[in-house]
Length: 297
Image (cartoon, rainbow, N blue to C red; front, top):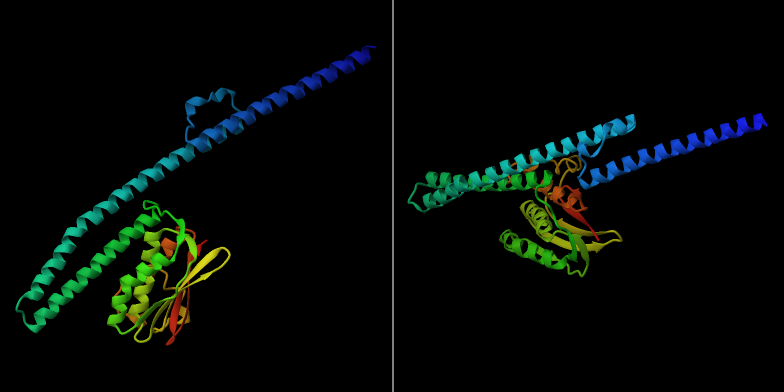
């Protein structure tokens, strides 16, 4: 009889311990869940918790969340500083560059010697190059630091392509090149303004490095992506350089005589990657290049 009572007592004690442990575990899990939820919502504060009632695991987790919150705030402050710096650079350089362009134009209108006229033209050319470089670096910095957000949406590609081709048709015709856009009714997900700029960079390069023939733009649909091809009959790109042309400021020795700063393709790739797309190139020296833009459908 006594042994039975002792056994029941032990069983009751064991059940009580299991129950207590279960309650403690549930309390710990509930606290962790609450911490996670508050961390996700950005409402996590140290004052919300009584450290004396938390386990060592909870304490370490609390320290981790606190460190994460401090780190996120530091990143935000640094981005704000970069944003302010970029805005200052953009603002402070606009007036000097505009003045350089204006005065170079005024000089060209004067009755100058042939040598002086050449110098005035060189000043204007370099000022335009500087303006392009500053504008490109500002755009790139904003993209890389998340200051400038793209807004991709599903829309037809044809209106954007027609606008880009229209903007560069005269430049192509001045070199005696054809510029052909194949009609398409396909749609994709993209930011119209920034994708047009990316395609404009590719089209500008195609015209710049094509001496005869021309450029063709066409659209090819796939299940997940839409491919926009810009193919030219230009000088082509050596195979060993095709992986380098997308790096910042890269300029091939074969095109040193051409105007450029080597940032257009890098900027184009950044614009496309920010909206879930990507860029590829296929080329053969002396026969031309095709840059393929892939946009999500």
